[in-house]
Length: 375
Image (tube, rainbow, N blue to C red; front, side, top):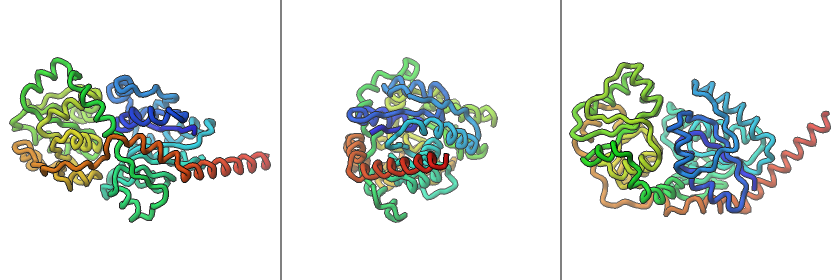
């Protein structure tokens, strides 16, 4: 098969690092990077560090408002994909790139597979929730991490083409954990010699809201331990714009590479984050997580006792700083066994997917024939 893979943000880069290798054993993959994460530390470095194949197309969509960015992606992706004679388009997760890729695939009458399908926070004020719902209901093949995701799709009437594969992010985490030990630069090695917590913060609901961002930062004023804070470019800009002063306990760094983040995650006492990917990585590392959101799509980690929701509640966050949330003793394998990429490729090679591909080609032939007749 000729497969178009669309990526644009950190979690998608991480997935590609594992899945592309499996796909390219037997199939042709064309990798399109929308440019959604435009900062070198958020994009180029991940490609280099994780050995991700260089994108065949980089749209370089400039940062802008969500609607404008989506529109630019729709136009760029349509122009890039239309001439490729692709058999299948793959989108991942819940980013703006996911939404645009899903819409363009179906506008071009191409089969669509959604990796990490079936996740729900049930909070439609989150752009990511809208993105994942649209992608799920447009996709022909749903590649889900666990049975709970399959059940959520079934409730919404999506029962065909659903495959439980595990999480490719866990595949990569297992490989990276050993390599990450020596990844930290000297300055950070000194900082992690004592107990510390890790903080990541990037979602618009937190960073673009002066009150929420201030409340979260305020929670760390009296932190009893060092707080290591790799600062997302958008978050850094808002901290400056809102004149928010970081407390002395926070060690702010530039964005870090994947191996550096894994090293910090594995050594942290607690992880505070609003990232869906980091919530999972905290679970992979068996480190308690405090989610700085009011809802989460990764409810399985909450149910297992390893994740707590604190939102932007200063007092709740500060309480978790003083006493890390106590996880259950059990650490069930929520995200598979490290072979998700193989299962995804196997799912894409099934007879069901083959019929979709054949149907898509027939549709395109009919469309081209109609266009020729009109001409």
